[in-house]
Image 1 (cartoon, one colour):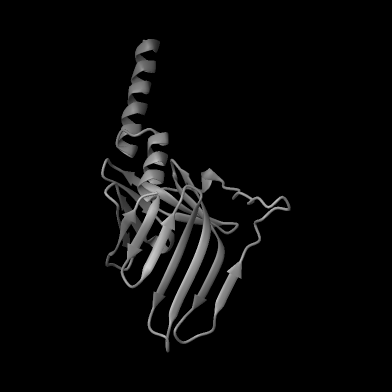
Image 2 (tube, one colour):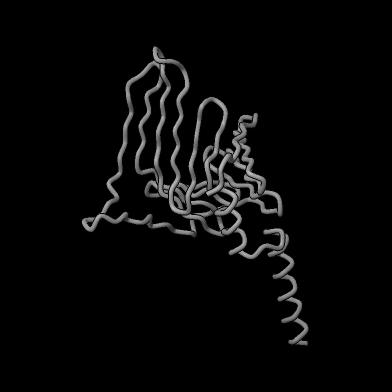
Length: 184
């Protein structure tokens, strides 16, 4: 009886894990996020994003020389089986009708190495994003062989496909596409 109960609990655990992650192990989910995200991405309106294993960079320019809308950001990033943690370290924004907004986080040590983020993986909550100490935790909501769905801030979602397509889905509706044009 005890053996049957133990086997039954093990089987139930495996079924629940498969239902949650589409049969993927946590390391498989982390690897999908890392491999499917790395590269150079282009989205409409003049935005380029470069994702590496530890950083991502965004450069965006719209408008013209009389009313430029310029944005540059650099962030640290960590990929986890539960989602993607990211912390911005440099931001520069010049909206068409406004002043420059600039931000820089000093994360360089005396020995000229970068201070890694201090992530807390317990802050990944499926279906929502959390922010603590400047780190944004975008949580895995769904995983299939074709895509990973992430919950990000303001109830928005990001669907990252294995074929190099990303769909950003704001909570208010609509969809914005980005395409990986080069893998790293």
